[in-house]
Image (cartoon, rainbow, N blue to C red; front, side):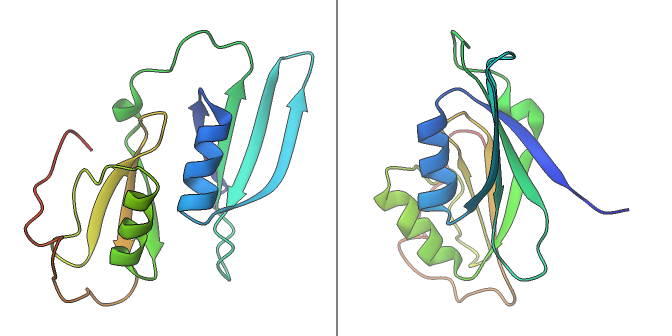
Length: 141
């Protein structure tokens, strides 16, 4: 058995692609548009060697309201080279860090569609440092 992908529905495709591709660094690898079904499937990968898992963004063209219940989904998790640098890039992009990497290892943010995203430091924990050490958690993740 091999893990293939996780699918999340997105309301604003441009915002979702900005978050996952520009801020987190994923790459779009394929797209399928269905004029008849009025939806698009966009598959993203990390590009890391040996990582074949994909994130499928499903965009229903005529969805009138943002999706709710993202927390019920659980979360997607990514190992990152530097959790602090990743969080700094996200903050610079306007993303709120809901659970800061106080421990040099784990952080949580939300995508524009409210999907919980866990960021885990690859390898050993980084030494705890400011501003993350004293930053309080906020909201739900």
